[in-house]
Amino acid sequence: QVQVVESGGGLVQAGGSLTLSCAASGSIFSIDTMGWYRQVPGKERELVALITSGGTTNYADSVKGRFTGSRDNAKNTAYLQMNSLKPEDTAVYYCRAERVYTWYSGPFFSTPSPRSFDYWGQGTQVTVSS
Image 1 (cartoon, rainbow, N blue to C red):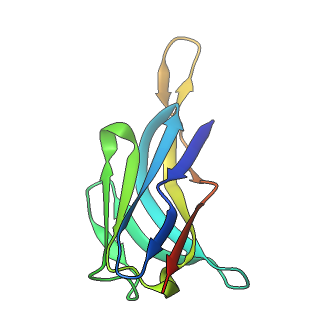
Image 2 (image 1 turned 120 degrees about the horizontal axis):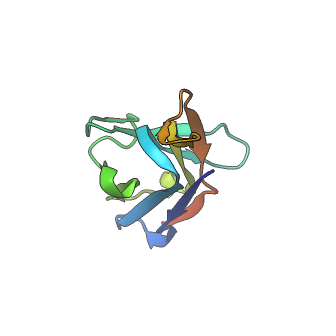
Image 3 (image 1 turned 90 degrees about the horizontal axis):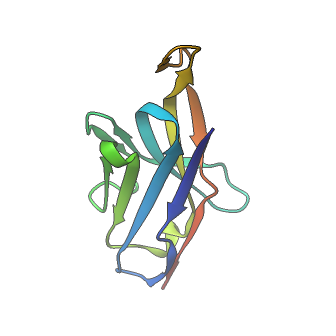
């Protein structure tokens, strides 16, 4: 089984910075993409940033130029550096490990599983005060 855990949320004043971390653990062979999403009560969860295993990043227009995503493939960890935070950035931030291949333990040796799955973390609250 794979676990995804976010950390680093908190309360910050407008204009401030926070760095979120997302650590995936378990019998992981590879993770194609790690994504950051956010959700406020009463609204749908929205994409914030995607980081591929090759380091390519894509951002929502609302955070371009302020947020920077990165990852450490060796540690199965992704980061979201958030600068110039605004009150409208207040949300629960979720990490999703996408297209995760795990090790399959066969009778004689282990191989990558033939199927991939996506895994969500439990979320971390970010509150930006004005």
